[in-house]
Image (cartoon, rainbow, N blue to C red; front, side):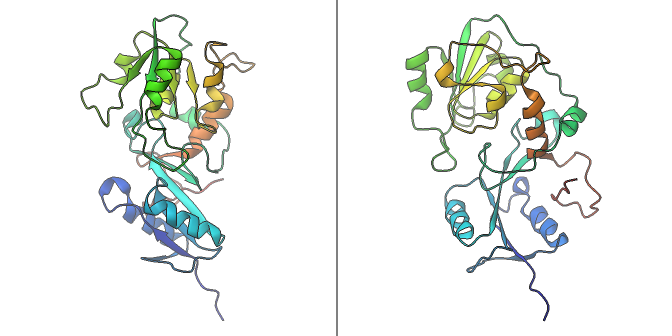
Length: 263
């Protein structure tokens, strides 16, 4: 009797940006049978969702209760259009750094040849990054977080462009920044690339290794390694594995899927 195929349920949206057909093709290529519904998931099965909220959160909990794996997709951590590509983040279980993934070494990040600016040692503004408050229960930014943080720490709140389309670009907004405070924003990761020190509040945030917790605000400005730069020795490897560009070189998989083989 032949062993049944592992099954996959893909719950990302149908729009081109969400790459549902690409996920389905990739899963079929590596041996999964894709389904429109799985009522009895098992340890061999997998669920693919976009973020972990609404229906996706309920299905994720149901799959995990039965030992199945959950893959959470989202826009790339540096922005979906970073470096002219089309970037996505993937992790098992959760988004924003709380999930699990193969960290690997720094080679993939180094190959991107990202220009890391030196730490900014001057400036006049503390920028607090507002967020939309959407996402997984327990991880999303609390209601009114930016305003409450402004009252505690001072500074200027940058409204989220998804809710306020007329805001300045991030680079313009960082012109006079001496520090950035975030709950768990991808804009804070971009601030790090510009050399602006960052403080964060969400436990487990993906940028934590290169920043400081908000409880330490006003203390040491920088995180350094023995080489004297912003702890990207560990963090760059995480982002190199967590992000995927549809324009980046692929593995030996000619089907054009979103699957990447880890070595």
